[in-house]
Amino acid sequence: MDRLKALATALQRSSAAGYIAAVCLPIGITLMVAAARLPAFVFEHLIVLIVVAIAVPWGVRAATLAAIVAVVSDDVLFRAPLGSPTVSGLRDVIDLALFAGVAVVVGSLVATARSERARAEAAAERECRAREQRDRLIATISHDLATPLSVLSGTLQMAKHSHVSSGGDMPRLLARLERATSRATSLVRMLADVQALERGGLALNLAPRDLRDMVAPVVEMLDRFSDRHPVVLAGPEAPVMLMADADRLQRVVENLVNNAIKYSPDGGVVTISISTENGNAVLAVQDQGIGISKEALPRIFEPSYRAPEAVDTAPGLGLGLNIAAQIVKHHGGTMEARAVHPRGTVVLLRLPLLPEQPDRQPEAGQ
Image (cartoon, rainbow, N blue to C red; front, side, top):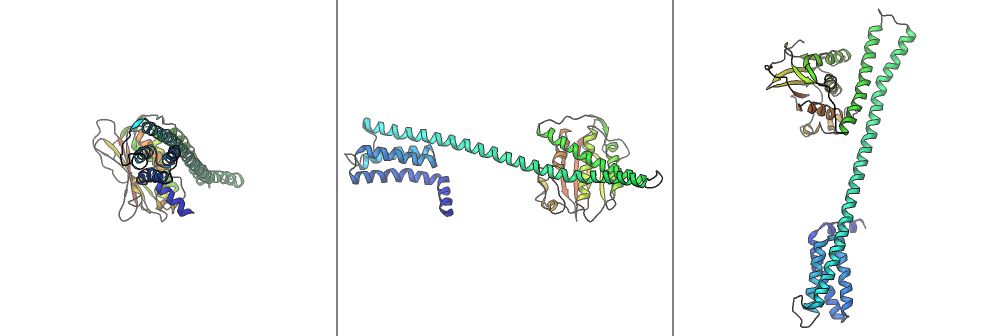
């Protein structure tokens, strides 16, 4: 049964099969009616059925061809004088108009129904994908928020019951609170950015900013909280000025560094370098992690896409890099990722500088 369904579907999709049927079926009906000496109205009814049967799977063109073949074969095989392939007389004109009209009407109705069905199926598929993405987003955000909230709760309980003093464990506990609060805040703001991008507008709070001043606090915080992944910043001594939304660009940098840490399960240095080139500020985030395959590199900024290597290493939504790329794009910049030999990945951000700034290379030790 399944094979028959597959065969029927294949034939329905083949225009050649439709044209073959449009030629062979009317001729076969004409021969049958002529051999049985059936009255003309039987022939006309049968041809109407054939035209409808061809119009449903193959459309107007094949059905119209069937109508023409039916009238011509009627003259050739059925009516005297036999062998005259013409449309002659009022009856032939009426038959042809009837058959062609049926072909056009039925074919148009079928085409409209198919178009509506295709639109409905596409809308249902989009809704299904959106629902799946929303469910995945809620599940992942809930999971990711649970960790910093648990840290917040546990740290506060520890401080409450142990009566720590400012000279004892208080700095360590405050650092844990800061990190957990920062992570929870980033997740909530990411949700706000997702909503803004879906609505087609991302309002930026642009002002002249020094890229070094925006990046340094993020690097300092993440370096302090990552024991196995030293986070190093290298940049020029002179300011690197650009028009930027500091809060959002800091979230972009935080996302990139967090990714570098998350996808470097064996540890390793994460290097952030700032330079200028051809009127652009260039920020590079390089890790020593699992890397990204050549096939996945062009797609990692697509919404909901995750490289196979990432899927096997850590949970995620595939939204962070897409949101980061959208934020950078709204700043007039670009993002790209490259593989690093022998292992690791570097993500490059290019953002337009404010005018009259010379090219500068990063200097280590900042």
